[in-house]
Image (cartoon, rainbow, N blue to C red; front, side, top):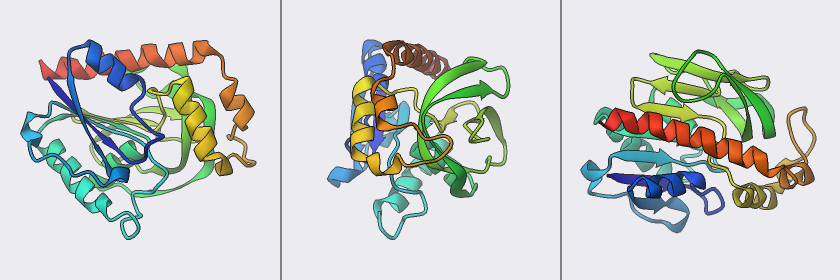
Length: 228
């Protein structure tokens, strides 16, 4: 099986997603838009598409011209019934493609905040601590099932159809990627009810990351079941 990763900026990589998929025998390819890489022509051979986060907005098509092409590619993959996982910006891209609006959230949500499941599902626990880094949110697309919410953001996760999963929060995060985010986007760590300090982010206990990995494994297993 083949997984393809869409990456928008070098310090928001796939973290534990790639580790888990490799152990499950997936061949992994990728497109890095920050390196001006092209989208693959052999898209039919892709079984699992993963869309990562980034500091840009889905509405920034004039500044990041590749966004239009990326949106067309994601829509094509949705229409072909591929398994798709969107993380943060990736979730917002999916929502936008499905006709929902993307806009600034009332509060930026950065750091470790509790997420609560909106309905019983195979993907995520009823309540857990997730890592967040976003200032925008999305309306729930028509026909999508809301899976989770947090105190700062109502629409944290949704399932579209049986094969498209969008997560506003980050389950793939490792200590390394959390530190890279705090170092490269540290200007966002100012004030706000739901914003952690750089020290708080960098001093998070290892058990937080272990728990994220276990939930990420649960998500991937649930999605892979849909390939069979």
